[in-house]
Amino acid sequence: MGEGKGIRAVLIVVCMIWLCSESLGAAATPIRYREVREEAGWEAASQKLQPGEAFDPPEQEELGLHSQSAVLMDAKSGRVLWEKNGDQIRPMASTTKVMTCILALEAGLGQEGRDTKVSQYAASQPQVHLGMRTGQRFFTRDLLYSLMLESHNDSAVAVAEATAGSVPAFAAQMNQKARELGCMDTWFITPNGLDGKEKDKEGVEHIHSTTAKDLARILNYCILESPKSQEFLSITRTMDYHFQDAEGKGNYQCRNHNNLFSMMDGVISGKTGFTGGAGYCYTGAVEDEGRIFTIALLGCGWPPHKTDKWSDAKKLLAYGKEHYQYRNLYREVELEPVQVVNGVKPCGAGGQKEGRDSVSLEGAKGGEEGRGSVSLEGAERGEEGRRSASLEGAEGRGESRDSATWKEGWQTDNVQVSLVMENQDKELKVLTGELDRVRIVKNLPKALEAPVAEGDPVGTVDYYLNGQPIASYPVLAGESAERFSFSWSMKQVKSMFFMQYDF
Image (cartoon, rainbow, N blue to C red; front, side):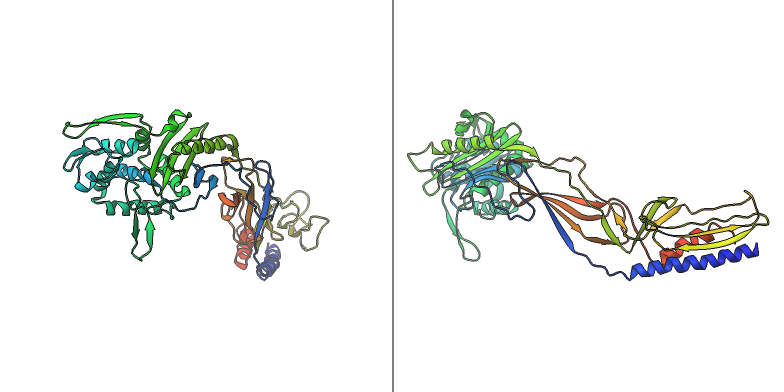
């Protein structure tokens, strides 16, 4: 027994020296990291973008529109599908009332029974107007129909005053909402869209204006994102509306002037506009086979070309319906394992897998042929390239022996962990056209530093459409790796010997 314990003590020292030398050697490995961007180009429609190729925007088809500025937008994503001077700042006339209506609804003016008293300023507004009188009372919900169906200027001012107390205060709310929606090139002065001009606090002069892109974004918010979107849609879809003033003394009739309703199926909202400075304007939305297209037209002719906006609207929407469909852009991306510097991980039962380090221990007791031996092998065997330390202690003869084997091997050379991309749905449906081009970029580290836990975020796989980001999926470590250190080595020695043998 004394001789066996002595052998085991020697083995403890030998294995400690072996393991600790390995851990100290690993700790001395220089750690170098370099972010690598592996780009995979593939064909989303008819063109393929090669890795590293600079994006060249596809040429859009010329539609021959009358509008000075025009935009066709995917309402769900906000992506511009076609544009003509989409960022040009221009007056927008009564399309302004889209913002007026949604702010009033969000302030509760659509509630039944809420009324407001007409001010002298509201009653003085020019045509087109309802003809309200100073001191007259109206239910604010009725005024929203007057605002959106007949585009009454006096109703717009009465609504603004009922919402914010004054027109300047309401205009400030309009501009704040525009900034929240990312409409940085929009400046509201009036709630009805009449041409206006003013200076801001810094003395910079602004006109009442927007861009085709901003106007389409504002309508997108009204029909899809606002908590009052359903009320907004209900008002703007109404063809005819009749109401009285709050005292029941006057009768008023409103008719919807969005003629696009009679020109095509799927129209869900819209607003016309005209002033001498803005020309004819229009913004509207159409739903078709799950797609929602938003259009915005500014400066679309002056009298007598009142109908040009309808021909432009039909051209834009026909183009969208013909050329854009939902496609699943998701593709399986091959993710190579990544190296873990100073890492160590289990190899599996028996330590028999290729390319790993392993330590095993066997002890036996017996009769007269009892013997003890130690062998350490650090040489590569064939293609396996593994290190092993083994112990056999036998006392006696025949089959009479006790044995204990550490079955779990540990890999310390070229430790790698697998990577997985987090996207359970395996779906990325995007409204795309034939000329749209997609790029997939793998943003992954060249190496990780131990320890690494399964599920740790290590990078991303990013999708770009026409050079613009559309989706990013996290890349996670698919397995764990501990840090190969002196303390880890001591822990393994204790586990192998002291906890398995009764000294």
